[in-house]
Image 1 (tube, rainbow, N blue to C red):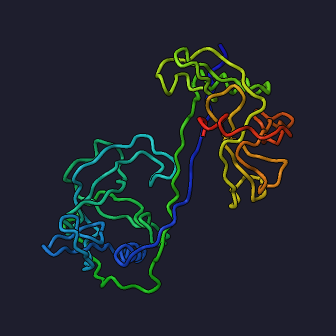
Image 2 (tube, helix red, strand yellow; image 1 turned 180 degrees about the horizontal axis):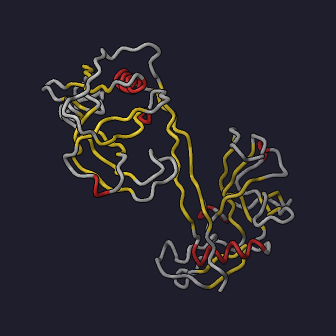
Image 3 (cartoon, one colour; image 1 turned 30 degrees about the horizontal axis):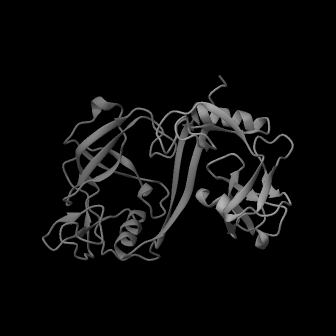
Length: 313
């Protein structure tokens, strides 16, 4: 049996969002070494602040400063920090109820080990040396032996307020396509497209999943399909993707390869984008050393009749 493949994969995107008056004041305050909460109608102080009361849904904007000291309400030890986490050495994730607040703030606690952490311990903010108006302006919390509370007074109005943030979302994991799709990928290396036939409904699925999505039974019989096929649906791409050297506009299509009962994705080339149409007959174009088709081009055959592919839309 062919080797089951696996490879590291990272999915990432920068998420940009604007800030309302409450979140803007909170993050700008962190830049100025001030922690702000928001007071509800019934007198509770919420940290981090929110714009609407979670109980009554009323809008709330009454900003109040709270202390940079507080109490750990619960915690968990992180023995193996990941990329981008607050500290590069083992630390504790803690929920800290700052003095003057009624809710807890999640952050990191710099401690020598799990034996040094306990619920009820006193901590204080350790500020980052360089601050820009982000939650990372709090570098972490650290143990605090003092009895006093440290509050910096502020009205919630600052010069040059922070109006937006960019959150760098990223997910790192190891992906394995499994037995069926590993065989599919190995066949592509030989410029062949292989699917699997369901023993019950007899449909051929490309790429194979290892099981029939209709009947739910395992599939194992390999069937070579293509190399020609029919465009079933398509879209015109007008926005250039980063790290993809393809000039826009171009066409990305669902292509039902001959002998397959499921359409796969592919780029259409060799024809002006505004001449691509449903029913267009196409074939795979391979480049030297590639492990998958670079694109699909027209074969010159007459267009397929709609009834020949309508079930594959």
